[in-house]
Image 1 (tube, rainbow, N blue to C red):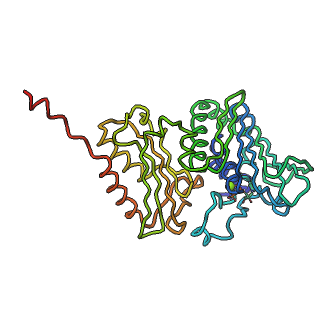
Image 2: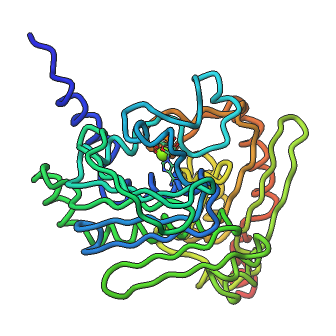
Image 3: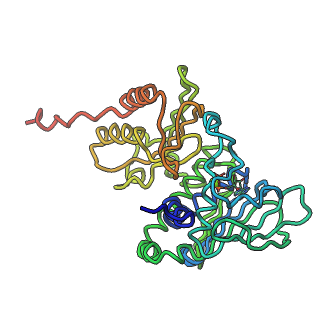
Amino acid sequence: MKSLSTTDIRLLCSGQIITDISSVIKELTENSMDAKSTNISIALQSDGLKQITVTDNGTGIPLNDRDLICKRYHTSKIQGVTQLSTLRSFGFRGEALNSICSVAGKVTIITQTLDEPIGEKIEFRPNGEILSRSHLSVGIGTSVIVENLFVNFPVRKKFQESKLKKESKEIQKMITSYGVANPEIRFVFRSDPSVTILKQIAKSFEDNLVAIFGTTLFSQLFKIHYVFKEIQAEILCFIPQNTSDLKILTKSRADNQFYFVNKRPIQGSFFAKIINKKFRNFSSSRSFPFVVFMLTIDPSEYDVNLNPKKDNVLFHNKEILSEWLEKTFSEYYIPKQKDSSKNENI
Ligand code: ADP
Ligand code: MG
């Protein structure tokens, strides 16, 4: 038996973190949000296979950090796991940029902070070390350019090529999710040659939903806002009114459901199960309702470190949340009585 080389270990792990084009976009966009950006632009060439660029107007990367940002397990967001109980940022594992370097043909970062008269363009090696650096001014913020993803992973690359259409839908849903949760951020999405999705900064959560989904859909939504007494948590939820014309508010797949924990998009978990079950009993359909569900909760109340994607969470007080959901949605979506009038008329 032999121990694997560090390069091989790095490649094996990176392939699990950066699984596809959307995981690159997710990691880079979350870094931009962590850097307090109000303007984030995502641009793809050849659907992202050739180039993925995420540009923000955030804080920029401090000069002293630049040697380390692409090194594995280097992060500016926590100093130890005890800080997870107060974590407010998306990132904390310090492995995304390093993994991207491992699986891409080339990674370049252009960044400038408020303290600098001029920015810097840095190219990185696959192991995360700096290959070259030069001065370049593009304004305060950061651009990360990822070229030729999976160039040395023929199986992964072929798989990516075979599912580009599905991937493009996933990417649009992901960017829409970030847009929904962040009224204060302007998102621009360009996929070569011309598709552009724009979401401007919105004044309120409601205005933001109108901007993204349109007035017709928004006007048929019901808002629920609840602040828990037992735990530091609150829920803001938009669901179809129980009197709505359900045509525009339902889909056969859960494409129009958006669940967040502290603005982090998560797989619906038990929230989705309860809401979908109550809605289906009510509407007697097999379709999924439009849902925007935002849980704001003290970070000590949950654990998000279940997988590198961090899209699943464990709650300390799950029963308090699920009881509330069961009760609220049972009261709101009361199943319609079966139509017995026909029988009575006979
Ligand atoms: P993590 O987000 O878990 O810290 P990453 O590998 O994604 O790990 O990023 C490493 C570090 O690079 C971050 O901790 C942050 O300091 C810096 N960084 C990455 N992207 C940006 C950005 N867009 N703006 C400012 N700093 C960034
Ligand atoms: Mg990160």
